[in-house]
Amino acid sequence: MRIGYKLYLRSETKFNIFDAAIGLLSAVLFESITTLIWLQFTHSKLSSVNGPLRLGQEVAGFIGLWIGFVGSPIVESRIRGSKKFRRDVGLSVKWKQDIIVGLLIGIACQFVLVDGLYFPFELLSKSLKHSLSLPARNLTGSSSNLGFYLELMLVVFVAPVAEEIFFRGFLLRALMDSLRDRTKFYVVISIVVSGLTFGLVHGELLQFPALALFGIILAYIAYKTNRIGVTIFSHIGFNAVAAVMLIRAR
Image (cartoon, rainbow, N blue to C red; front, side):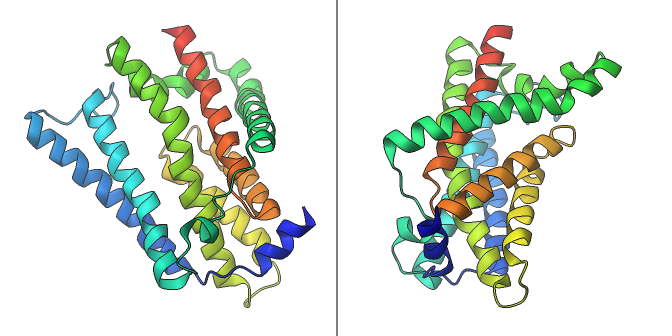
């Protein structure tokens, strides 16, 4: 752990908050563009905001979002980094260690942060559990069996890689690079802000507390290890538990 800490302080990147903000905006823009392209190509209408999302629309949006999440760090690595993308975002995986530790952390976080955090409130409100699962059910609600499992595969295996590259590999480092010379609390601020941003980007008010806390935990792990290998598998484990619950409820 100590070696990773020292390496992080000697990061070769000089990312900044403005770069990260532009990257996030570009991801949202690409999501809109790819969704509109799909709608035009298929002559379809936009799905209802509060209803089930069509498979094509959702996948098209995913593709655009992930292009932004991965593309912006690649560009910034060329401009302000060492030009070695994997090094600049900490994309290094120690397979046996990261898979086991990461999956265990992610599974534990799903039960502790989601089930544990909301359990007392579920006793007071019988509809809360239904409301918490509504976004996930809308995601796959209009899919055929094949589409349902395709979406789950994307959410479980692709989304964690793209999101970890951006939020823990790029945004966290951009915050730390920007704040390092401005405050002695730059580590804490960077970890908390990156976690809160992760929660906000998902756009689900009810799920925000659990997602933000999960983002903070992942940011701390990325900071201590100077890699996103563990966080990728933690994210996969977290999403996999939700996917299993959807399959059981189908």
